Image (cartoon, rainbow, N blue to C red; front, top):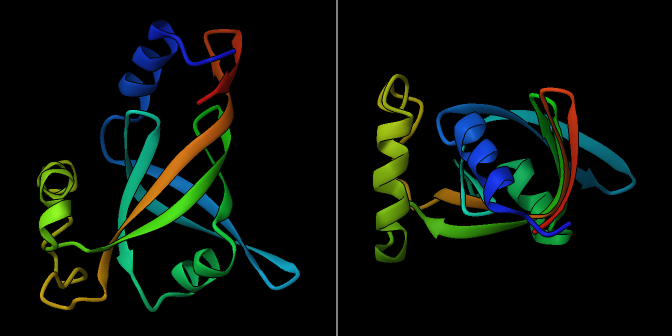
Length: 139
């Protein structure tokens, strides 16, 4: 089913805040998975990462990824949106700095480094469970 208003509300409630998300990419013939802090909005998760990380290198070679968290699994397309301070990223980064405020400025993230980038995880299809109901979703 195409995403409905009801499902979008569930997604916003469940993931529209700092959410730990498992992100799986392909490294040659091997899957690679890691957990990232993320934020959901309008059919995509967003996270701040590093352009020279293995995650981004793998996405550059094959943007098809899989994710999972809290009774939710999905296929997605990863896209490096570039430097977090690029003007085109200012609106989303303003949101992420607020969403991630508990840890964002703890020294781990260096926005001065142009390799600090915004990763968009655009959902293509997913399975969401909510209070005993299964939703098979197409985005």
